Image (cartoon, rainbow, N blue to C red; front, side):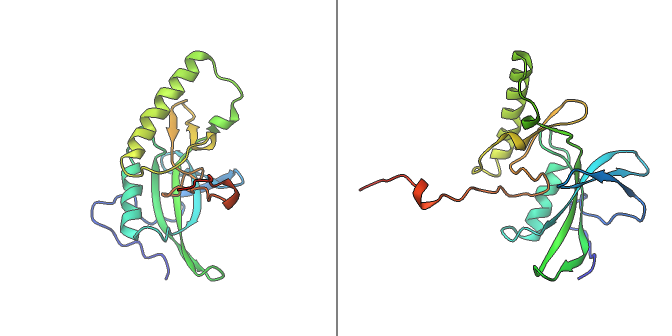
Length: 179
């Protein structure tokens, strides 16, 4: 097991942190806030199970794509955690994303100009996502803002995950369609 971060061709985002590289600053309740000791960059650090719906190489390539994609929540670094969670029998990843201190759900109202700006940026971001993931639902938790006010989007409320959490349709919610 361990932290075996062997390089995958062309994937720069996958690497092991050096000791003291990232310093924990606090928590949001769903992720840790960390600061890069050398650059001062603030990031969100998540611990998530490796996605069983994707090959490990596919998952890393998605993280790499997100590294420099405009309007999409940027991924700064991905590494395997040092331990396997035995109670779940899964390996976990430690994923660092850019810091998104506000979500659209944090705002009750936007001015017309702000609303149009957000709408345009959201549509551009989701257009890019739709190229590789055509099926997902969007909510206000999937739209965030950088400290500089730039709009960022993703296909999951957990910005570290590469797959959408698709809602399961209950039997009572299914349309009654008769042939």
